[in-house]
Length: 295
Image (cartoon, rainbow, N blue to C red; front, side):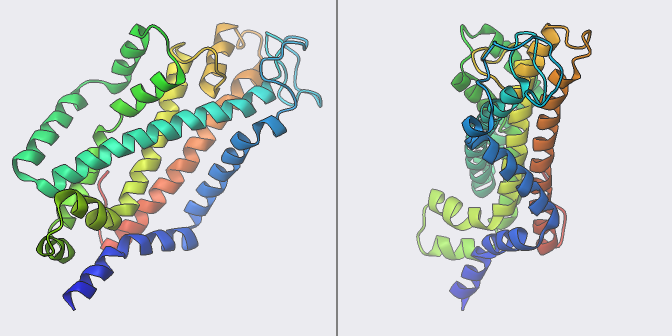
């Protein structure tokens, strides 16, 4: 009977995911927007009418049938750049978000499950790094690197963005570590890592997923910020890099709204979709557990 009860508790996280996917309206809207951008990124070569760096068009041309979003000062089709920029922005966001999530989940689970001196030491390390302004630290690192390739960008963003996630995962792990299924796992002789990832993690999946979509959103916005400041990879076209180049070329003075507005709207819309998804996970987890969830 005790094992059956523990098994039911262990499946709670997956049941909440099923409920989330089937019944939450905000999640469906967020997933629809996310799927749209993902398809654009995958099929960019088929969607874009021109190569993003093709300079064979008339500079500063306004939106038309041939160029739905106009042409920039270099004679490049802006619609094609927005489409191809989806690939870079989403790739950096997802990969940096996954790196952030891996570090944050491991540190949060370990600190919450072990507790005691181990948990205190880990949280004090987190607190020390939280004092440092993360974005400012990223800017300094990016400025001092000899070259800013996409992998350097991913490592910088992912390696410095996990602190709040670790604290959130720890707070949820502290409560889960006292439940019966964890005691049953200890009796069965499971090790620390096995209990953390096989027993506790499935029960906090909604909170983990909510944190993941938040850090992916943060990673995309950070990439856009660094690229806008000229600290991204200049050889790649992303939405942030498009904004940076448009401001460098005085798009505001030329009233070239068609150059600045599309990438900005794409960043805002994609970020909005992730926020919808993340908040939906938290709502469902809070309703099922009968209380608020800390992030």
